Amino acid sequence: MLSTILSRLCQGCIVVFLLLTLTFILIRMMPGDPFTSDKALPPHIKEQNEKRFKLNESEIIQFKAYLTTLAQGDMGISITREQPVTKIIKSSFPASAILGFAGIIIAIGVGVPAGILSALRKNSFIDYGTMILAMLGISVPSFVLAPILASNIATNIPFLKVAGWGGPFDWFLPSLTLGLATAAYLARITRGGMLETLNQDFIRTAKAKGAPALRVIIKHALRGGIIPAIAYVGPAFAMLMTGSFIVETIFQVPGMGQHFVNATKELDFFLLQGVVIVLGILIVIGNLAADIALVAINPRLRESN
Image (tube, rainbow, N blue to C red; front, side):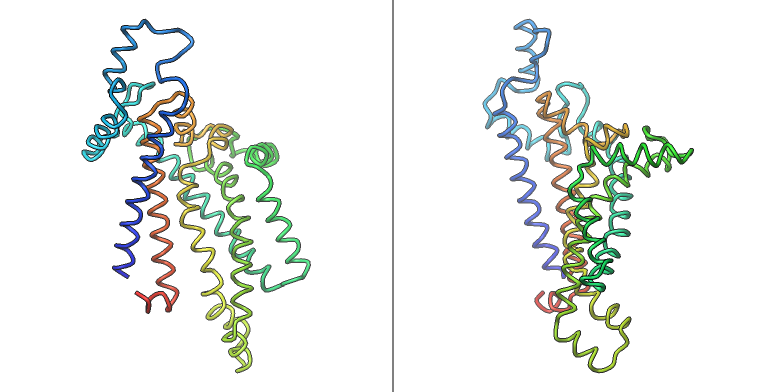
C-alpha cells in the first residue's frame, strides 16, 4: 500500500510539472499580450508593466523565476486584477469545493444504483429505459440542462433560487446540473462492470452452491462490479470541484471556473497557471484516493503490492 501511494505521488508530481510547463508554453504562444486593451497604453507604461512582471525577459528566465516563487508558496500576482493569485483562488475555491462535493454525491447516489439495477435487469425495460436516460444525460450539454432545471424546478419550489450563492438551497440546482451528467457516465460504467463480474466463474459457482441471490450480489458481484466506477470517480470528482464555467455563469456561482476562462481570454499568465496547478493537484489527489480505494477492495492489487 505504501509503495503504491509513494509511486502515485511521484507520478502526480511529474504530471503537475508537465502540465504547468505545457501551460506556460502554450499561453505565451497565443497572439497578443496581457496589456492589450481597447485603450492603448503609452509605451513607457507598457514597458514598466512588462518589467514589473518580468515579461521583458526571455521565456526561460521567466519560467525559472516562476518556479522559484512557486517553491516559496507564491503563485504570483494576477496581471489583470492586481491581486495575489493565491488570494483569488482561496476566495473562489470554497464555492467550487461545495459544488464538487454536492455534485459527486448526487452522481454516485444516482449513477451507481442505476447502473447496478440496469445490470441486474439486463435486456429488460428497466435496462433499456435506464440506458436511454443515461445517453440523454451524456448527450445533453450543461447549458441546455441548467435552464431546463431552473425553469421547471426552481420556479415551482419557492425556497430554491435560480441564481446566487448564499445558502444550502442555492447549491442544489448547480450541483444537480453537474451531478446528473456525471451520474449518466457512472450508470453506464457501473452497468458494464457489473455485467462483466456477473459473468465470472466464481459468481456461477456461488449460485450453484445455493447462495442467496442478494448475498451473491452484495458480497461477490458488487465488489468487483464497482471497480470501474471507483476508477472514474477520482478524476471526475477533481473536475467537478473546479466547476463548470457555463454552470457557474448560469447560476452565478463565484467559483474557479470563471477564473480559468477569463484568465485565458485576458492572457493573465499567473492566474491561469495558478488555476492549472490547483486543477492538476486535485486530479492527482482524486486519482490517488481512487487507487487507495481500489487496493482496499481488490485482494489481487493488495497481493501485487
